[in-house]
Image (tube, rainbow, N blue to C red; front, side):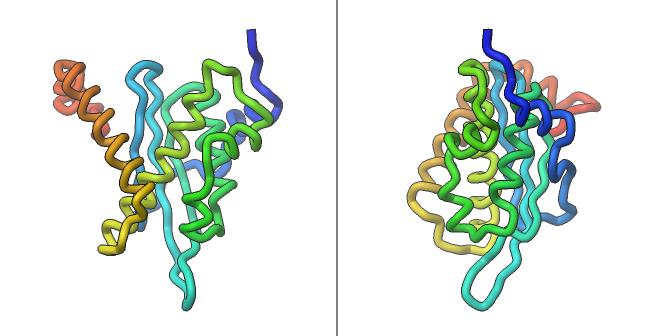
Length: 168
């Protein structure tokens, strides 16, 4: 049985950049119906003369220790980076920063990267900017997976949307 690294435990117990940003420049929402994890990632972008910097980033995650830790660590990896630098972050960067994840929890690192990509996609789309091909492909894949999930579990989705505590 695999255990969590000290870094995972530390990020889980003391998550960095937890919370939301009012009126974010970009917001990414992703989830995994199998494990039940849901991640919300918010970014605020500062435009300079030459580039755009992710000035602030926050997250809200409903999930296991690994989901919270990967959300926390991706905010550390991205804060004060350019959009281009942020888009270069991959699941392996998240896993390495946490000194590993148990194999069954690797999907959490993918969710964190997907949430980041969705937030950047949302930002670029909102600014009517050109979206890099790889980001467009990632967005379409996430969108297709969400549609498949919502179709497959349509009764559950209707209950969530109609319930008092639905968060969609």
